[in-house]
Image (cartoon, rainbow, N blue to C red; front, side):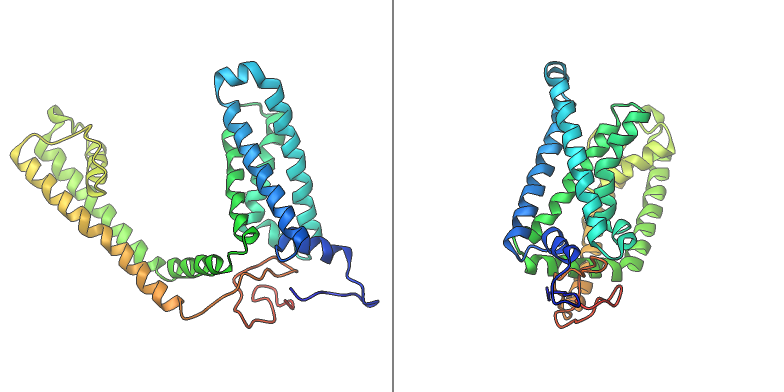
Length: 277
């Protein structure tokens, strides 16, 4: 990242803080991310252990103290991220901004609305481990992630039509199976029959419901064969778009103003806010 200097030629404290928190090109930045990811993993482990009854009964107070320690630590880190980014609102509504907020919000909500179910939401912290791509300097993997995102976005219309066709198909198949098999064979309603069609079409096959009549088994066989062919369709759609998107190469450079990523390799200005990179 090109250094941003003030009028006196010295870098501002926000620029130094940004480089440490958001970049992994320096030793300080790498150590910050390594310690952060270690804290994230430990905090998730605390939440998981707290859900175990025997462990909670014996070490409940210690786990509670550890949970609040990590919550306060992540709160400070979240505030520092907002402070060092010039466009704080843009970062706050970004993917990692929302994840960072969700990582600390349940703990404070629990003070007003006690409930053990809020602990499940705190496991969202594990998503923050995605920052490990910066720590390991896996620029190629970051570019491939951008390519995959572009391919999924470009093929979204086709995928929507495909999902709508599959939804229509499972409703038709489920309705037919309800008529053929009936409630005596486990197909007690059309929603239950549609559930069986989804399970069978996706080749999961739980086996909790199965047809017993000859017509029902024949229809089930067709659905199973159809399931294998349907799996190929979204794969092909995304593969085509990946081939198109792979022509454009992007870097993992983060904008010092809004923290946006996915810029072209030769980009000098941020594509999101227009600031100089």
